[in-house]
Length: 358
Ligand SMILES: CCC(=O)SCCNC(=O)CCNC(=O)[C@H](O)C(C)(C)COP(=O)(O)OP(=O)(O)OC[C@H]1O[C@@H](n2cnc3c(N)ncnc32)[C@H](O)[C@@H]1OP(=O)(O)O
Ligand SMILES: O=CC(=O)O
Ligand SMILES: [Mg+2]
Image 1: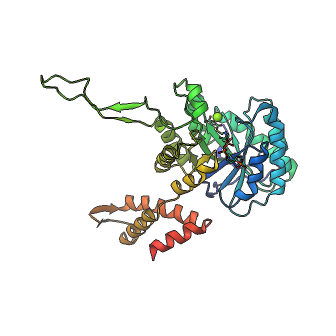
Image 2: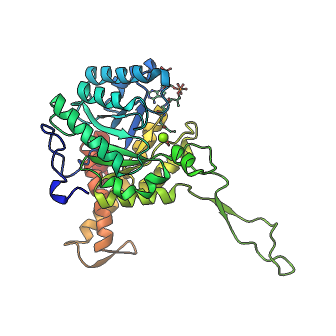
Image 3: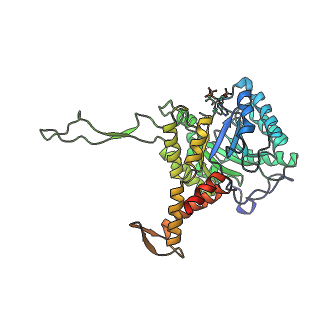
C-alpha cells in the first residue's frame, strides 16, 4: 500500500506532479474512431468543437493486422489536428496482456503525449493494473519532457474488475474515470445476452396473476410485464465508487446503432443514476449524448427557483406544492453546477439556459 504522504509524489524523476483534483471538463460524449480507417480519420478535424472527446481507439474493433496503422494514424492525427480549447483527445490502448500495449503506450506518450488528455485502459482487473500503467506513464512522461500528467480511465468489463472497483478508482491520482464495458463484462460473467449494452426482452418482471371466476389465480391470463435494466447494478456500483473517489463515471457502448430510441433511454438511465457521459460509436449517437447529458432548460430553471426560494440554504419551503429543504437544494446545486460548466464551453446551451432565466 502506498502511504498517504506518498500518494501525490511523482513516480519517476522528472515526471510532472500528479493532479490533486481531477479536472471536471465536459465529456458528455467520448466519440470513438478507428485511426486506421481513412474515412473515419478524415472526419476527425471536422468533429473538433462538435464533440467533447475524440477517442482514437486501438483496441477491440480494430483488426489485428491494422493495429500498427491505427497507432501511427493516431500519432498523425495528434500532431496535425488543432483540437481547440474544448475538445479533448483520448485514446483506448490495447489490453495489458496484449502484444501491442507496450508499443501503444511508449509511442503515444513520447510522440503526442502533450496532446493526449486521457488514456483509457481496457479490461482492468484490479489496482495492480493501474499501478503498472501509472509508473510506466511517469517514466515515459519524464523521458518525453511532458509537463502535465496524462490521466487514466479504466473500463469496467470483467467480474474481477467489478469486485475491485473501489480499489481501482482509488489506485492513483491519475484516475479520471470509469466506463461500463457491457460487452466484455457480459462475456466474462457468462451472462446470456449477445447484445452490446441495452436491455433484453427476456429480463423482465411480470405482474401477479389475478383471480379467475373460480377464485384461483389465472396464470394464463393477460399480465402486464416490464423489461428491466440489465446494467443497473453495475452502473450504480460504478457511480458510488467513482463519487467516493472524486472521479467520473460513464456509460459505455450502445451497439444497436439504428435503435436511437433505446439508445437515448439507456443513456438517460445512466445520466439519472449519476454518469457524466457515454461513448458514441457512430455520428448518429453524438446529438443523443449531447441532449441527454446536458440538463434540460426546465431542470435548470427549476433548480434556480429552488435556490432562490431557499435563501441561506437551510429550513424547508413549499414550492408548487412540493417540500424543498437543505437536501433538495443540494440536488438542485448539482444541476446548476453542471449547467454552468457545460454553458462555459457550449454557447448553444449558454443561450438556452439564459433564455429560460429571462
Ligand atoms: C462493444 C465493445 C467495444 O469495444 S465498443 C468500441 C469499439 N467500437 C467502435 O469503436 C466502433 C466505431 N464505429 C464504427 O466502426 C462504425 O460506426 C460502424 C459501427 C462499423 C458502422 O460503420 P458504417 O457501416 O461505415 O456506418 P455508416 O455507413 O452509417 O457511416 C456513415 C458515415 O459515417 C462514418 N462513420 C461511421 N462511424 C464513424 C465514427 N465512429 N466516427 C466518425 N465517422 C464515422 C462512416 O465512415 C461513413 O462515412 P462516409 O459518409 O462513407 O464518408
Ligand atoms: O469495451 C467495451 C465493452 O463493452 O466490452
Ligand atoms: Mg471491451
